[in-house]
Amino acid sequence: MIDHVGASSSLGRRLMAQLLAVLLLAGVTVADYLVWLGWDQHKDVGPDGSETGPYQAWQVVGLVLVLAVVGIGAAWRGYGLAVMFGVTGGLTAAVCVDWSDDESGLWVVGAIMVFIGTFIVTTTVAAVAELIRSRSRRRLGRGGRGRSSGSGQGMTGGPVQDS
Image 1: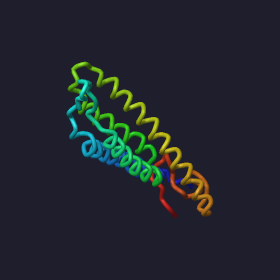
Image 2: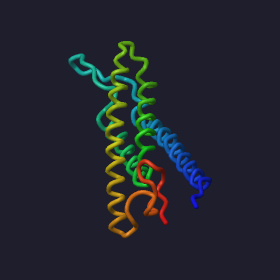
Image 3: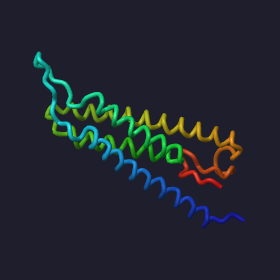
C-alpha cells in the first residue's frame, strides 16, 4: 500500500529545504557582492584621461572564488537547483541595485549579461557536481541515481540524505 500522506510530507520537506537553500544562497551571494564589489564606487582615471573600473580584477576574482566554493559545496550536498536560482538571483539583484544609478541606462544590458552568464555557470557547476557526486557514490557502493537507491534526489529533487 502506498502512503500518499508520507510521500506528500516528504515532498513538502524537500521543497521547503530547496526554498530555504535558495534564500540562503541568495543572501550569501548579496553579502559576497557587498564585501568584494559593493564598496568600490569610484572609477579610476588614467594619465590619458580614460576611465576604468570601478572594480579591479582581484575584486572580481575574489567574488567568483567565494561563489565557486559556496556553489560547489551546496551542489555537492544536493542543492543544485538552489545554487542555480539562489546565486543567479542574488547576484542579479545586487548588480541591479548597485548599477541602477547609471544615467545611460546601459546598466540594464550589464545586468542581463550578469544574469545569463551566472545562470549558465551555476547550471554547469550544479550539473558537474551532481555527476561527480553520483559517480563517486556508485564507486563507493552506495547505489545509483534517484529515489530507488536511497541516495537522495540530487540536483532536482532536494537534499541528499544518506542512509
